[in-house]
Figure (tube, each protein chain N blue to C red):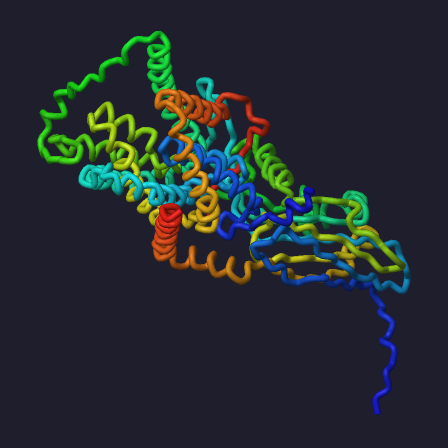
Length: 255
Length: 313
């Protein structure tokens, strides 16, 4: 006969979390989604804890151009391809990240907009400079940081990148919640949600949760049709357009 | 109120943005009204409006091809019944137009890869709409002034340019009462086909004047024949854009059409109340304004020097 015993007291601090929704369905009525991350910190020693939540959408290469004035006209430069940029990124925390941990752990975890591993590999080459081997040199030169900042700035403007140091709130002892706001233009795909418990500037416990954003029903069918059988889709689209135009002319001819 | 309006937002599966459905249908109706009023496709007006609404330019250009094809079909039958379509001339123009559409779709693809698509689209609008609008305004204001002063209308120079007859490969076009080489119409079709793929327009605003002043076709058959050629060219462009770039959003095309057909019928009825030269002057002003608005971005200092350019992946 089994007796339900209380679980043994955890010796190490741990974080536990879940999402209110793990599947976001994109239909014709899709206007973004709000998902709540809720969880608890288990720590018998009750040391001060900070929770950081990182949400990364599917990775998308970004092509960025810089406008410059040529003979009175604003012309785009050659586009630069940036890789490693998630299509959606949110960093939420209980305090500003710089107060929670130092540069090293934040960089390793990719926590915060400054620590995203966005790079333009096609612009880089490795060479020996001033006798130092394996130096990464970017063809963008000193402007490189401007370019990288522009990627983040444009994504922020579109509502796709957010960093909020008040978004994670402790609602009760050890119990926290945060909201993920997905805009309408959030990309389709798999989203990695990482919940990290920090104590004394070190990550002590990590939980990973996944979230999928997918088209369903008619929208999914049409999207797949257009991308998997593009020529047939084109023929059907043209036929629909011609038939609709013909039907309209018939309808008005009678009236 | 805003919440109510948001409830009518509609997510477009290919464009991957949400648009306000009544607004889109209403815009379709307004552009349809204008196209019925002036006997034009209206693509030059619709594509910029779609881009301003936040639809990716590549999707706007490609989906507009489907919309122009549909609205041209709905209005061509009226011309066909009145025997105002020169099918032979239309087919010759379209044979150039199809090749032009193919070239245009490829050019657009390369331009997207180079990140220069916006620039070329803006420049094309500025140059072509600017020139056509200015010429039309000049011509129509001239005839309005002459009528006000009570002068007789300027006699139409019926002398056809000699080079039209010097070229080989002559063909008879009975309905247009022409016996000319097929080279000029094919070249014209080719040029308009390229433009229609790049600018997301039917190209009527170039075809119609070119048919009147270059080919010297009778005015009676010009609009119907241009519509017939536009149907073929834009249908091919629609298939090519879908096949090569996957940028045709048929849901968007159909929504535009839903408002467009009603607007076009109302516009066609309203057009009887205006004099031809007044209509042309009005159209010229619209064409000029759209061209200048599209070109404006090339001259004003951008808010952010960096821009994301499409065509990745």
